[in-house]
Length: 319
Image (cartoon, rainbow, N blue to C red; front, side, top):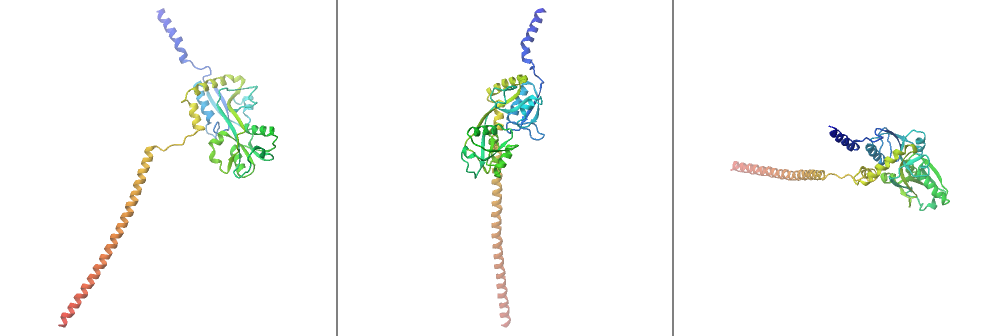
């Protein structure tokens, strides 16, 4: 009996890791979302979305976390972390601000660059020609900061006009309210249809990497994110790569071959029907015209016979 008990206890000890629940299972994490479509965003009352959100949701599923998303205003995310309004910032770009009180994930999430745009009719061709010009930038945007720093180092003086979004920056360029504007790479790639009447500046000016960020006292969250990211990036078919395909490299939807064939057959049938009806109408018209001619000929023949009969009758009567 004692031997069986020992075997049972050993079996429990060996199998227990397979059923172990993560230490943070059920942990509720409040996540700040900065509006940076397609990387992270919240639209109205809809759920959060974007590349970083999809990947974070997958990590949360594996870690048994419960995530609560709230909107974070541009440039305010780090302050919201400090005052405890959020536990994790879903998207932040590398800067000197990510030191001191903050911990950011080390496994690379996304490499990005910012670009400058001018009106399609602009004759600005190099950075020196921006001297004395007005540039549209998004308030608190890291690319705007990069542009300002770069131009300052080259002794180029500009006037900067701040806007709430990249959409507004583009609009300002289109109506010639500004001479140029600063836009992020992901926005360029996924909103290219909006870029009519503008053209890209010859060179990217600011390269950045993007991260999840938390306070030092939530370092464990960042460590688990890094561990899960490393695992996801090693799997070629993982959600990490699927999310990239969904948000940054969207594939054109193809029409199923059966539907193409069905549409082609239906089109051919309709064309054949139209052709048959047109040909039938043409033949019918010919036959009607032929019948009309025969009818006319018959009437003329009848009139001739009647006239001949009348002449014959009169001739007989006069004999």
